[in-house]
Amino acid sequence: MNFSSKLIEEAVNEFSKLPGVGKRTALRFVLHLMKLNKNEVDQFGNSFIRLRSEICYCEKCHNISDKNVCEVCSNPHRDQSTVCVVEDIRDFMAIENTQQYRGVYHVLGGIISPMDGIGPSDLNIETLVKKAAVGEIKEVIMALSTTMEGDTTNFYIYKRLKEFNLTISTIARGIAIGDELEYADEVTLGRSIVNRTLYENSLSVK
Image 1: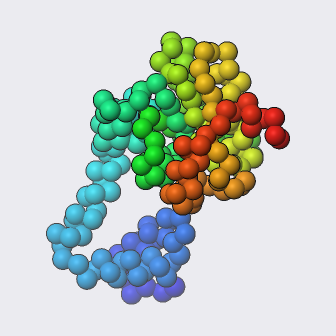
Image 2: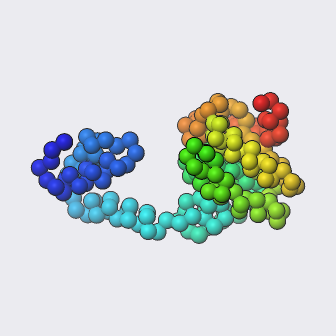
Image 3: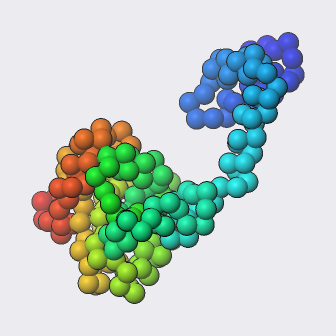
Protein backbone atom coordinates (compact mmCIF):
# COMPACT_ATOMS: atom_id res chain seq x y z
CA MET A 1 0.00 0.00 0.00
CA ASN A 2 1.54 3.28 -1.13
CA PHE A 3 0.90 6.48 0.83
CA SER A 4 1.20 10.10 -0.26
CA SER A 5 1.99 11.13 3.30
CA LYS A 6 4.34 9.69 5.90
CA LEU A 7 2.02 10.95 8.65
CA ILE A 8 -0.88 8.96 7.20
CA GLU A 9 1.34 5.91 6.83
CA GLU A 10 2.46 6.11 10.46
CA ALA A 11 -1.14 6.48 11.68
CA VAL A 12 -2.28 3.54 9.53
CA ASN A 13 0.57 1.39 10.88
CA GLU A 14 -0.46 2.16 14.46
CA PHE A 15 -4.15 1.34 13.88
CA SER A 16 -3.24 -1.88 12.07
CA LYS A 17 -1.52 -3.13 15.25
CA LEU A 18 -4.98 -3.56 16.79
CA PRO A 19 -6.48 -7.10 16.73
CA GLY A 20 -8.47 -7.79 13.58
CA VAL A 21 -7.60 -4.49 11.94
CA GLY A 22 -5.96 -4.70 8.52
CA LYS A 23 -4.30 -1.91 6.57
CA ARG A 24 -7.43 -1.04 4.58
CA THR A 25 -9.60 -0.78 7.70
CA ALA A 26 -6.86 1.22 9.42
CA LEU A 27 -6.80 3.62 6.47
CA ARG A 28 -10.58 4.14 6.77
CA PHE A 29 -10.11 5.00 10.46
CA VAL A 30 -7.38 7.50 9.66
CA LEU A 31 -9.34 9.18 6.86
CA HIS A 32 -12.37 9.44 9.16
CA LEU A 33 -10.27 11.12 11.86
CA MET A 34 -8.98 13.61 9.29
CA LYS A 35 -12.57 14.75 8.67
CA LEU A 36 -13.06 15.62 12.34
CA ASN A 37 -12.16 18.96 13.85
CA LYS A 38 -9.04 19.30 15.98
CA ASN A 39 -10.89 19.26 19.33
CA GLU A 40 -12.62 15.98 18.47
CA VAL A 41 -9.32 14.38 17.45
CA ASP A 42 -7.62 15.68 20.61
CA GLN A 43 -10.44 14.21 22.72
CA PHE A 44 -10.10 10.90 20.90
CA GLY A 45 -6.35 10.72 21.46
CA ASN A 46 -6.46 11.95 25.06
CA SER A 47 -9.01 9.29 26.00
CA PHE A 48 -6.43 6.58 25.20
CA ILE A 49 -3.63 8.44 26.95
CA ARG A 50 -5.77 8.72 30.09
CA LEU A 51 -6.82 5.10 29.76
CA ARG A 52 -3.24 3.91 29.86
CA SER A 53 -1.98 6.32 32.52
CA GLU A 54 -4.93 6.46 34.94
CA ILE A 55 -6.55 3.01 34.81
CA CYS A 56 -5.93 0.75 37.78
CA TYR A 57 -6.99 -2.63 39.17
CA CYS A 58 -9.36 -3.13 42.09
CA GLU A 59 -7.47 -4.04 45.26
CA LYS A 60 -10.17 -6.56 46.21
CA CYS A 61 -11.21 -8.33 43.02
CA HIS A 62 -8.50 -7.37 40.45
CA ASN A 63 -11.06 -6.03 38.01
CA ILE A 64 -10.15 -3.05 35.83
CA SER A 65 -11.33 0.07 37.63
CA ASP A 66 -11.08 3.86 37.80
CA LYS A 67 -10.49 3.63 41.57
CA ASN A 68 -8.50 1.47 43.98
CA VAL A 69 -11.75 -0.32 44.88
CA CYS A 70 -14.23 -0.88 42.06
CA GLU A 71 -17.90 0.09 42.16
CA VAL A 72 -19.07 -3.50 42.66
CA CYS A 73 -16.78 -4.23 45.63
CA SER A 74 -17.61 -0.89 47.27
CA ASN A 75 -21.37 -1.33 46.83
CA PRO A 76 -22.91 -2.07 50.26
CA HIS A 77 -25.84 -3.83 48.61
CA ARG A 78 -23.66 -6.54 47.04
CA ASP A 79 -23.21 -9.86 48.85
CA GLN A 80 -19.52 -9.83 49.78
CA SER A 81 -19.61 -13.49 50.86
CA THR A 82 -20.48 -14.79 47.37
CA VAL A 83 -17.62 -14.58 44.89
CA CYS A 84 -17.94 -15.27 41.18
CA VAL A 85 -14.61 -16.26 39.59
CA VAL A 86 -14.20 -14.98 36.03
CA GLU A 87 -11.35 -14.88 33.52
CA ASP A 88 -11.34 -11.17 32.68
CA ILE A 89 -13.40 -7.99 32.42
CA ARG A 90 -15.28 -9.30 29.37
CA ASP A 91 -16.83 -12.13 31.41
CA PHE A 92 -17.48 -9.73 34.30
CA MET A 93 -19.43 -7.48 31.94
CA ALA A 94 -21.33 -10.42 30.43
CA ILE A 95 -22.54 -11.59 33.85
CA GLU A 96 -23.35 -8.07 35.08
CA ASN A 97 -25.48 -7.50 31.98
CA THR A 98 -27.75 -10.40 33.02
CA GLN A 99 -28.75 -8.47 36.19
CA GLN A 100 -29.15 -11.86 37.87
CA TYR A 101 -26.10 -11.82 40.13
CA ARG A 102 -25.76 -9.75 43.31
CA GLY A 103 -22.48 -11.01 44.73
CA VAL A 104 -18.95 -9.79 43.99
CA TYR A 105 -16.25 -11.03 41.62
CA HIS A 106 -12.71 -12.30 41.52
CA VAL A 107 -10.93 -11.68 38.21
CA LEU A 108 -8.17 -14.18 37.48
CA GLY A 109 -6.58 -12.24 34.64
CA GLY A 110 -6.54 -15.32 32.39
CA ILE A 111 -6.82 -19.10 32.60
CA ILE A 112 -4.29 -21.89 32.91
CA SER A 113 -2.92 -22.67 29.46
CA PRO A 114 0.38 -24.61 29.30
CA MET A 115 0.46 -24.18 25.51
CA ASP A 116 0.63 -20.41 26.02
CA GLY A 117 3.02 -20.66 28.95
CA ILE A 118 0.39 -19.56 31.49
CA GLY A 119 0.48 -21.39 34.81
CA PRO A 120 -1.33 -20.91 38.16
CA SER A 121 1.35 -18.51 39.43
CA ASP A 122 0.58 -16.15 36.52
CA LEU A 123 -3.02 -15.72 37.67
CA ASN A 124 -4.75 -14.03 40.62
CA ILE A 125 -5.39 -17.29 42.47
CA GLU A 126 -3.44 -16.82 45.71
CA THR A 127 -5.49 -13.79 46.76
CA LEU A 128 -8.66 -15.86 46.33
CA VAL A 129 -7.20 -18.61 48.51
CA LYS A 130 -6.29 -16.03 51.17
CA LYS A 131 -9.87 -14.71 51.22
CA ALA A 132 -11.15 -18.24 51.71
CA ALA A 133 -8.59 -18.96 54.44
CA VAL A 134 -9.73 -16.04 56.62
CA GLY A 135 -13.40 -16.98 56.23
CA GLU A 136 -14.52 -14.01 54.11
CA ILE A 137 -16.28 -16.23 51.58
CA LYS A 138 -19.30 -18.53 51.90
CA GLU A 139 -19.61 -19.49 48.22
CA VAL A 140 -17.29 -19.46 45.22
CA ILE A 141 -18.97 -19.69 41.81
CA MET A 142 -16.76 -20.98 38.99
CA ALA A 143 -17.80 -18.99 35.94
CA LEU A 144 -15.02 -19.72 33.49
CA SER A 145 -15.57 -20.61 29.85
CA THR A 146 -16.40 -24.28 29.28
CA THR A 147 -13.21 -24.96 27.34
CA MET A 148 -10.46 -27.42 28.23
CA GLU A 149 -8.38 -24.57 29.66
CA GLY A 150 -11.36 -23.25 31.62
CA ASP A 151 -12.10 -26.70 33.07
CA THR A 152 -8.44 -27.16 34.00
CA THR A 153 -8.46 -23.84 35.84
CA ASN A 154 -11.72 -24.72 37.59
CA PHE A 155 -10.27 -28.00 38.83
CA TYR A 156 -7.07 -26.38 40.06
CA ILE A 157 -9.01 -23.75 42.03
CA TYR A 158 -11.33 -26.43 43.40
CA LYS A 159 -8.34 -28.39 44.74
CA ARG A 160 -6.98 -25.24 46.40
CA LEU A 161 -10.30 -24.33 48.03
CA LYS A 162 -11.92 -27.64 48.94
CA GLU A 163 -10.29 -27.74 52.41
CA PHE A 164 -12.11 -24.58 53.46
CA ASN A 165 -15.62 -24.37 54.86
CA LEU A 166 -17.39 -22.94 51.83
CA THR A 167 -19.60 -23.97 48.92
CA ILE A 168 -17.92 -24.35 45.54
CA SER A 169 -20.38 -24.21 42.65
CA THR A 170 -20.24 -23.90 38.89
CA ILE A 171 -22.55 -22.28 36.36
CA ALA A 172 -25.16 -24.64 34.93
CA ARG A 173 -24.43 -26.24 31.58
CA GLY A 174 -26.80 -23.96 29.75
CA ILE A 175 -23.52 -22.72 28.29
CA ALA A 176 -22.48 -25.24 25.66
CA ILE A 177 -19.17 -27.05 25.95
CA GLY A 178 -16.42 -24.99 24.36
CA ASP A 179 -18.36 -21.72 24.51
CA GLU A 180 -16.89 -18.42 25.68
CA LEU A 181 -19.02 -16.61 28.27
CA GLU A 182 -18.77 -13.24 26.54
CA TYR A 183 -20.63 -14.64 23.50
CA ALA A 184 -23.47 -16.26 25.48
CA ASP A 185 -26.82 -14.51 25.31
CA GLU A 186 -27.89 -12.75 28.51
CA VAL A 187 -30.91 -14.98 29.19
CA THR A 188 -28.91 -18.21 28.90
CA LEU A 189 -26.04 -16.86 30.98
CA GLY A 190 -28.42 -15.47 33.60
CA ARG A 191 -30.13 -18.84 33.97
CA SER A 192 -26.75 -20.56 34.19
CA ILE A 193 -25.81 -18.33 37.13
CA VAL A 194 -29.15 -18.73 38.93
CA ASN A 195 -29.28 -22.50 38.35
CA ARG A 196 -25.65 -23.12 39.32
CA THR A 197 -24.76 -26.53 40.75
CA LEU A 198 -22.17 -27.91 43.15
CA TYR A 199 -18.81 -28.26 41.44
CA GLU A 200 -18.40 -31.78 42.85
CA ASN A 201 -21.50 -32.87 40.92
CA SER A 202 -19.99 -31.64 37.67
CA LEU A 203 -16.94 -33.85 38.33
CA SER A 204 -19.07 -36.95 38.72
CA VAL A 205 -20.58 -36.60 35.23
CA LYS A 206 -17.26 -36.28 33.40
